[in-house]
Picture 1 (cartoon, rainbow, N blue to C red):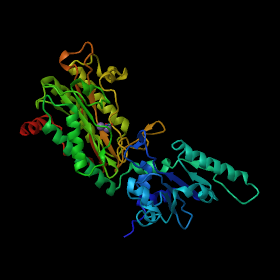
Picture 2: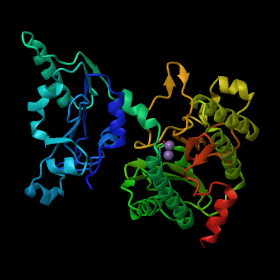
Picture 3: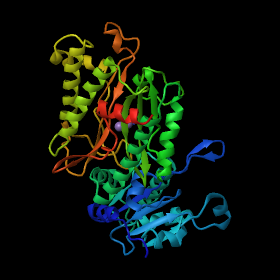
Picture 4: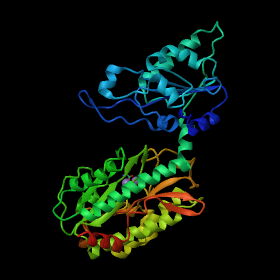
Length: 435
Ligand code: GLY
Ligand code: MN
Ligand code: MN
């Protein structure tokens, strides 16, 4: 059966202004070095609307036309397909991807006037593809010049993200099914890592194991570069070298998520390399866990991103005062942002096709309230650099983050990543049973 137009595209059309057209380009191939490329990943908005995963594609959406949805694509080419693989081609764009018309990408420029003509509004995201920006601007400018003929060009250019990104904030049941698989795959990888880790291993061995699990289950790979940081490396927020030895007595922080059918998962766990947390590690760990679990519980309709962040700061700051990491009144310390020495990042972010997903966090000055269908990460942490002065020495070099992906529903939070343990006892039990 031919594939239908995606329901997301139909909804996008319903939200477009009267008498408008949208031009949505796909991603371009990215060079890795010389003449070799990274594996192609489609532009997230383009993928969301079309599901089409080849490079050199442009979607043209014009609800007032009989053919409302056209795709410009690479044509079939037996010679090139020997090297780069199968192309859907013009036929496939229609039969497999629901386009009502399709053309070779090389014809886009010559059809541009026809695309733009007699529309009031053009939806097009300026500033991403300068070459296409120029082509479109030149055409509009040329059309303006023809003022003694009945040729009307768009008067307004609107960023389609104003529609698409708001749609992407709310996940459909079909999207949530895929996100649950992405979460399950990542959870399994973290469990495997907990079972496998031993003092003397290298961080990259754990990275390899995790990404092996991702690929084994059909994930495209990691949704972002995996962070595998032992000991003090866990205090470097974006540590991705993953090339140090894992030492007895240290913690290991793993922040790794899979990209499955275009959707990301994002999990962090911090566990002891020898299978047992020390007393000091446990104190920091339990404090982060307390903040994390309370914030997960708060993921409910009406709660704002700022309220969540604020709560995590309060719990962590009070706890850090009790442990002697900070000295003073928690309220004062928060006012003076003293907690940022150890907790310097946000509580979390929305997640979907992009790991750091699109959508507004503020409406004007107001923090966005959560609503059913929103998926966000909850990922507080404490990072104590080894050269911190004037703190109890047992805490030096400890970095802990705990991160889950949480769906907001009318019935409370649903933790997509619940299959990987986070209570210290559960983790220790899992690790000791792995011997
Ligand atoms: N791994 C990226 C993040 O946690 O936001
Ligand atoms: Mn995250
Ligand atoms: Mn993460």
